[in-house]
Length: 198
Image 1 (tube, rainbow, N blue to C red):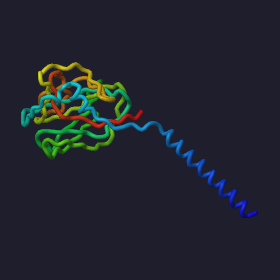
Image 2 (image 1 turned 30 degrees about the vertical axis):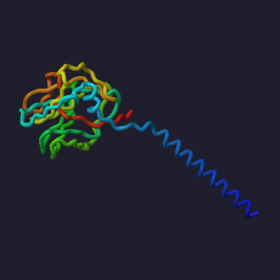
Image 3 (image 1 turned 135 degrees about the vertical axis):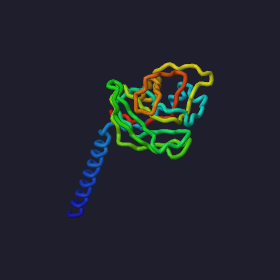
Image 4 (image 1 turned 90 degrees about the vertical axis):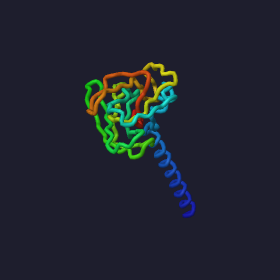
């Protein structure tokens, strides 16, 4: 009799553990979708054709320049990516709110090696869907990227969840929101890693 009761208790315990496991699995699935981190730069260069011809500029006069963009979904910037043709131990990278023309965040990074892709982890920066931002840097060293025929491109360019609206620049060493647009080249390389959050 005791053996039969013991077997029943074991079966019930196993059933209970299975139920608990299934509930835990369902609970994890209900946490929502898991989004992949993305970076827009390679797709942007390919779509524009600016990956066809590259010139290097070193110590060529200082500019604040970069891309104006809008996220197509709510998300966050998790890290910054940059590559330069010269070292720069204090490269200033700025994220701008275009509606107010104000600085959201400034990061100073150390580009310690030439022609090397650097990724800099930062405190996450939340971005709102369809809001316009700009990511810029101030430097006198950059890659100048063009199409082989030098022709212009038409914005916007869609790269994953990022809509790139324009490339702009302004001369000088001060942290100033760029105002001059250019459509037949891109000066960089500056980008960020982005992950959708909703």
